[in-house]
Length: 114
Length: 113
Image (tube, rainbow over all chains, first blue to last red; front, top):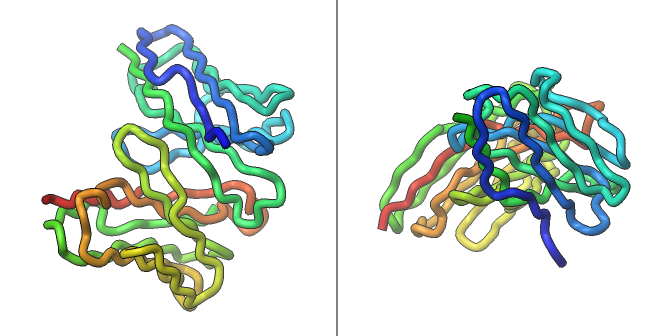
């Protein structure tokens, strides 16, 4: 069974540009979570999508947005990039009925803003 | 929102040593999860503990959930370089939002050969 996949692996942008990151969940998983991880430390929750709807967002500005497609894949868009947006962006998936919401992560997209 | 604090933040030890890392909160959690993240990869789920006082073993790793379900520990016996990584604990964000996790800031473990 294929795991969570993310693309691209690396992305280099300049300040003010826009970035689009993509995630494909494990087959059968309907929830997708996005996290930002800076400096190899803890995960900061960005967005949660389930069944095509945004269920919750973390404490990030509106220039962080995304969507979930009918096939449950998701994309994260970051507009007006700032230097501090440089981080590893992780996507995780889970499924409804998972009592403890154990999440399965992709390898991440490393975004560098110059 | 329930918060998780992990300690120590960094730990560097020699191969063969034992170690314990901690995950603490002032809130009660219905369950806690432990993940390990290796450099350049996403976190991988190691274990979920759900019952106060529960002990789970995964080879040389022993996980314990506190009796009051406010804390958890991870003990590694005879650490190996392959144990190097960022260890994260996570639990439900709130009693009303079990489908969203909150993560601790992690313990960065380095095991030197």
